[in-house]
Length: 88
Image 1 (tube, rainbow, N blue to C red):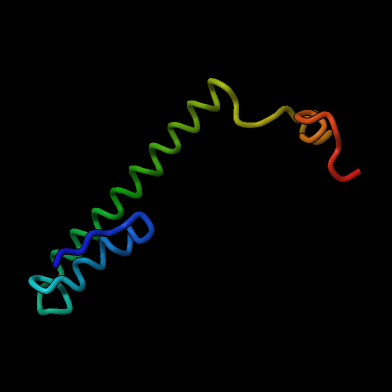
Image 2: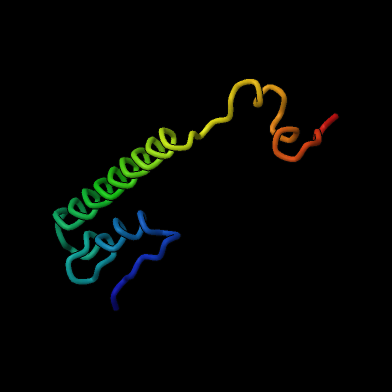
């Protein structure tokens, strides 16, 4: 039976698949090599996702901007976006 991680438990599944694998898993007499390879892969994927996210958000910030001007932020976004205040 092969373990396929879902989106919900991707990181724990990547490392857990080497702990509980019946052929070469750590709990079934296998060494640390496969576990360390999976942990390394988890770190690489996490760093790749963080780096790509940073580049995408920086690109969006340069092209469109991610923040509103200070004046609009102080007045409140409800007035700017909808023409009415939310809490007054």
